[in-house]
Image 1 (tube, rainbow, N blue to C red):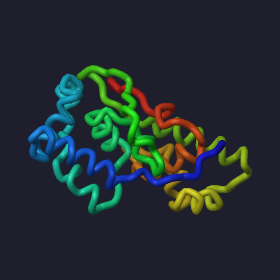
Image 2 (image 1 turned 90 degrees about the vertical axis):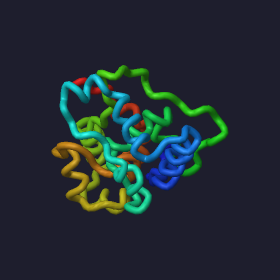
Image 3 (image 1 turned 180 degrees about the horizontal axis):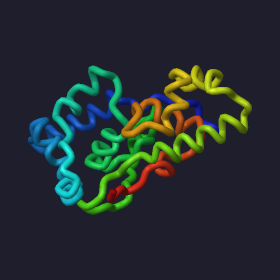
Amino acid sequence: MRLQPADFDIAALFDALDAQRRSRGLTWSGVAREIWDQSAALNAVRADHPISPSTLTGMAKRGDTTCQHALFMLRWLRRTPESFLPGAKTDTPPARHPLIGPDRRLRWDLKKLHEALDAQRRERSLTWAQLAPKLQCSPSQLSGIGRARFAIGMKLAMRIVCWLDRPARDFIYAAKW
């Protein structure tokens, strides 16, 4: 049964981060540091810039975050993307991501997501222009996912996952670069 494309609940993600932050007596800078340190070995090799506290605190105001940043947060919370969809059961223990060490980082495989979306779009004889309103975005946002270098919005990523009727984990991998 195909799920209706649903919005990932950014406010609930922020609230979960904030609750965890308060329960552990952390500042937002402390949360950002812990989130970044989950992949300390990889970060040292890549010399990437760390996740910013404003990325965390600003997402509620922006109403979205990138799909890649969301994975950092979800890993820290030990939650799946689906646990922040409308109707998700909150009385069950949160599902866990695959155990990955500090030499890895969870990443969306946007090329794979685009290929699955394009295949399903073609199977249903839809143009990008016909599909875009169903996913509440522009046709160019959809056709460009396969060329995206870094990320798309988490809300759009999860609308696509729901429209494909597949779990997000089908498009997430443990990157080592």
